[in-house]
Structures are given as C-alpha cells and as structure tokens.
Length: 314
Image (cartoon, rainbow, N blue to C red; front, side, top):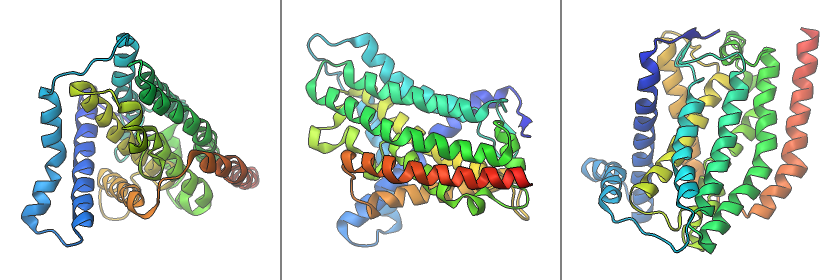
C-alpha cells in the first residue's frame, strides 16, 4: 500500500507534471529537428532545440486570440481547460516510489475515469468553435476513443486483477518479487498502444492531424492553444507514468531509492512512446478500430483469463 503524502505534495504535483511535459516536448523537438536534417546535432544546437517548446509557449501567450462566428465559447474553453485538469487529477494516484498524493481504494478506476474526462474534453474543444474542421477532429477522437478505451480498460483491470485490488499501492506491492510485465506482456503492450491513442500521439494523431488543418485544435490560438497542447503532453507523461505502478513494479528495484526507480522507469517508457512517433506511421482510424475489436480486445480478455486462473490457484 502506498503511503499518504504530505498535503503540500498536492500543490507540487501539477508543477512536477508540467516540468516533465516540457522536458519531454523539448527532447522530442530536438530529435525531430535532428531527424529532418539527417545529422547529429552539436551540444549547442541540441540545447537550442530543447528550448523550442518554451519559445513557442511564450509566443502563444502574446498571440492575439482568433475568434469564430457563433462559437460556443463556454463549452470550447471548458474543453480546453479540462484536458490538463484531467491529466493532473489522474496523476493524483500515481505513486512516486511508494508515496502517492492520494492512494484511493479505487485508484485504478479513478485513473480510468479521468481518462474518460480527457476524452470528453477533446470533443468539447472540437465542438466549441463552430468550425467544420475542428468538429471533424473532435469526432475523430470519439471514434478513436471507442476503439482504444475498451482494450485500455481491460489492460488496466488485468493488472488490478493480478493484485486482487483496485488500490494502486496494492498493485505495486504485489510486484515485489516479479513485475506484472512478465506475467502480463499482452496487457502491457495494449496499454502502451492505448496510452498513445489517449494522448492523440504518434501513429494515433488523427484528431489533430494536418490533413484537417490541425483537427480539434484548428481554431485554437493564444493561451487556449498553449493550454490544450500542453494538456496533450501532460496526458502522455501521466499515462507513461501509470504504466510503472501497473506493470513495471513501481518503486521496486535494487540499490537506488524507490522514487528514483519510478523516475527512471517513467523516463524509459516515455522514450519508447516518443520513439514510436518516428517508427510507426499514422494509423487510419478504420483500420485501428478493426484491429482493436478483432485482435486487441480478445487478446486482453485471454490475458485476463490467464491471470484469473493464476490468482484462483495461488
């Protein structure tokens, strides 16, 4: 069971997640620039590229806000703000080592509920501006969500089933001898795929794809765009971080303290997700939906059945 954290950590959590998101965005920008130029960047060039997201953020803060005719401003702004809020609320149950801001009895369900809130937020962001392109981007995310949410939920539930608890701290404790990624490799793989889809990242970036001029974020500008895209990076960091207590043993590891193992494992998962953006092409949603319903859902159900048999015989 994770230890309760001091109250001040609840205030530090958004700052820590935002810092991790900025660092990840900077490294991704540096890798993208290096790949485009086809050469290894010098240390100075690398630092300049890493600082790119910060410069872009400052530019958006001073940019004049663009408005559309007959827009539903309230719902649009609500959707924009809810993206980072959902990511931060999901992070409340993430243990750093063996300490979480709140180790809820239903922490696994809480995390999945906050993901559903982010799903709603992206659709509201596309609906609010009263623009055809942004609305298409929002509906694309709904289609994507239908395809990823069920296998994602089953993957998370499989880890909880292995620990016989919905408390994240209990899931970590159950992996003291053997990590769940060894017992549940299929669930882990499906979780990583659905984590990218939830963050509309890499091969699942169609909701904000360039083929519809930016998708759900088409009409966003100034601080609205900064908050929305920043929330996307927060979602990526939080979903990567949650794979650590679910499948990678949380803070368990030799020699180093638990919090350092959590950071190392989270960084490794983030590296894999960032790398997938370059290794995997954008997936057509109709093909991914077919893969999800025909392959991923039966695969995770089979994985859950194997884990259930193991738990009953233990």
